[in-house]
Every structure is written in C-alpha cells, then in structure tokens.
Picture 1 (cartoon, rainbow, N blue to C red):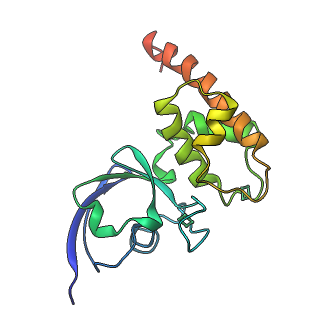
Picture 2 (picture 1 turned 90 degrees about the vertical axis):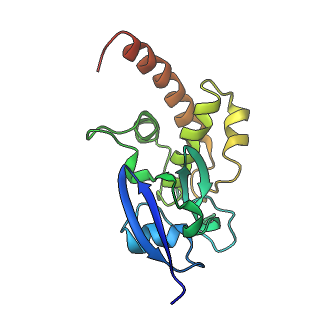
Amino acid sequence: MGTRRISVTVDGVAYSDDVEPRTLLVHYLRERLGKTGTVVGCDTSNCGACTVHLDGRSVKSCSVLAVQVDGSDVTTIEGLAQNGELHPVQQAFHENHGLQCGYCTPGMIMQSVDLLKDNPDPSDEEIREGLEGNLCRCTGYQNIVKSVKAAAKAGSVSAAGVAGGAA
Ligand code: FES
Ligand code: FES
C-alpha cells in the first residue's frame, strides 16, 4: 500500500519497480536488485561505505530515498568494471594495497572516481579532503591516498592511450 513506481537505470540496466516512499536507495540496491557490493557501514550517514554515483556524482545511498532516483542513472561499484576489466581506480587500489578488510573500499573507490573527475591530478591534501566523508578503520589512509595518486597517473596514461586509439 502506498508504493510508488520508479524507473531507474542501475549499472546500465533499466528497472521499473514499486517501492515504499521511505525505502532508502541503499536498501533498494541491496535487497531488491541484489547489488550487495554496496554496503552499509553506519546508521548516521557518515561512513561513506554506501557511496554510489547518481547521474555521475557520488552520493551516500543511505541518505537518498529510492523514490528520489526515479528517472536517474545510478552506478554502483558493481558497474564500474567494464568488459571484465577493473576500472583504473579499482586496479590502483588493488596494486597499492589501498584496502585491508575491504569494508570501506566500494565507497572509497566510488568517491575517488568522482574526485578524479573534478581533479585529475590531486595533491595528497586534496585527496584527503575529497575522501573526508569516507571512513576507513584499517588503513590509516596512507595507502588509499597512494592508490588514488596511482589511479590519477594511470588515468592520464589511459587517456593518452584512448586518444592514440588503443583499446
Ligand atoms: Fe551510508 Fe554509512 S552507510 S554513510
Ligand atoms: Fe577496513 Fe577500510 S579497509 S575499513
């Protein structure tokens, strides 16, 4: 009773679903769509573990209602890899040990991708600032900053690659 129909594209697939007005986006993604790569790390909207992209910008999916994404495009950590290849930011976290327990990682990566979009060559300080809303209880952030820097470097390389016609 009282549900609303939403149409939303998630990780490139169109969905039409009836949701309750109070359903949070994170619960819709996890429970209805099975997108369990997006995780819940707090109940106070401050850990950032649930970060996804909404129309290309990062948002904490625990602070958005499912009805609010009607007509939008959502990307989760599960939609970041393309054609079986890790996204450069995923690859960089992997190579630079940007994670330990991995719980914060999906959100950290989604936030980092957004950050690099605005600032393709961030300083350590800018990375720390950009990731302020994402908490990591394990790494001390050192390797996370290193990972984002490496991704920034790889990004400029792959941009050159694309310009040169490489796949
Ligand atoms: Fe969304 Fe913590 S679960 S900010
Ligand atoms: Fe464990 Fe960040 S790697 S919380």
